[in-house]
Amino acid sequence: MSRERAISRREFLRSAAGTGTATAMFFASPLRAAALPPTPKTIVVTFGGGARDEETFAPGGQRYIPRLLEELIPQATFYTQVVNRGILGHYVANAGLATGCYETFDNFMPIAPSNPTIFEYYRRDRQRSASDVWVIAPSNGFDCIGESNHTLYGHGLGATVVLPKQLLTLANHRAVADYDQLLRDNYESPIVSPLTAKRQDSLHGMAELMKLSMDDFLAHARKSQSPDELSLYIAQHVMQTVAPSLLWITLHDIDIAHSGAFSLYTEAITRTDSICADLWKSVQSNPEYAGKTNLFLLPDFGRDSDMSPGGNGFQHHRTGDALSRTTWLMAMGPNIRQGVTVDRPVQSVDLVPTLAHLLGCNARFSSGSPLTEVL
Ligand SMILES: [Zn+2]
Image 1 (cartoon, rainbow, N blue to C red):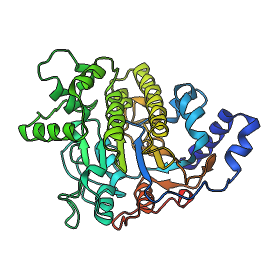
Image 2: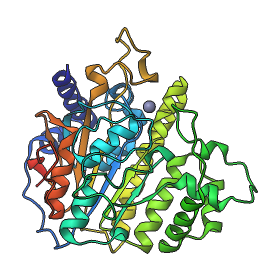
Image 3: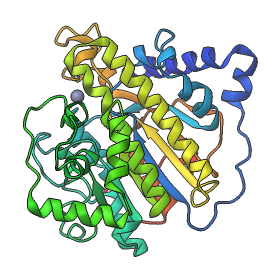
Image 4: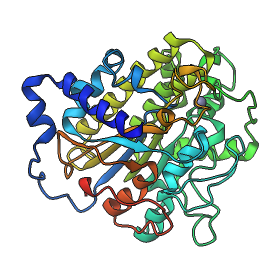
């Protein structure tokens, strides 16, 4: 079924591209662009919260992702069959994306990954500071994603993890406005951990490091529709003021599908589509990133099929059926071929060894294999 899904994606893309350009777009193998500069930047964005083909690459879904189809895919190498064989919970799955191993801890607990993250591999092997590696994550549950508890890595080698909702809570300490819609921690668990004094101190330090004006952030929050728009704002700000070499952004708006409202789910997909395209535009207009940044874009996993007897369609990702496990990945950048599709099955855990190769570090504990088509 995964393979069928991949073939369908290829066909959908071909139809989206139009018959006139399909051959050139999907079967040519243009020469690689100019050689990579010595220190490429890397940005990873998870197309967040689980989206199905029916609402993205299928003919009826393409209207929700116009900018991926028109602006990004023509510039990308596109993997049509990326299988996630791990636990389909957002935090544990994203931790698995970051370690290149299927993590097995309780998704709803604040637990550090067991295996080293790409952030630690990069920082240790390339002797980079914490300010060179940033993670922007959607909810309190992701607080521990930046650093594993592996004995050879871990403590002091992780990423700088910023949770925009925590920053908003801190900035709005006088409660001058109602940001409930932006502050909702996640769409699956009602448990919200309080902002401890230690965490508040660390947030103040982080805001200082990225020269973030809390007034400007609040002003932006007032006109934001969703938490992921706050994440985009922080990402663009960090790129301007700190310009880290490795930036990881986990988007999550799409997971509002758990509410059961189909229109909120598809609106979130279109918003995510826009956020990804806007981020790539920011890359091109920022001299620290333009022409020397590789972007990897992929969902953490899918959602249940309408046909799964144990599920409830788009609403959840509980059945573990083939469709909820089979996603896609697109990669673009100065050393990555444009307009190429790859149909061979790959896995979510292949991302980390690929990033490690590009970043010049060794992901020695990852169970994945590098995606050779983009190296
Ligand atoms: Zn979910």
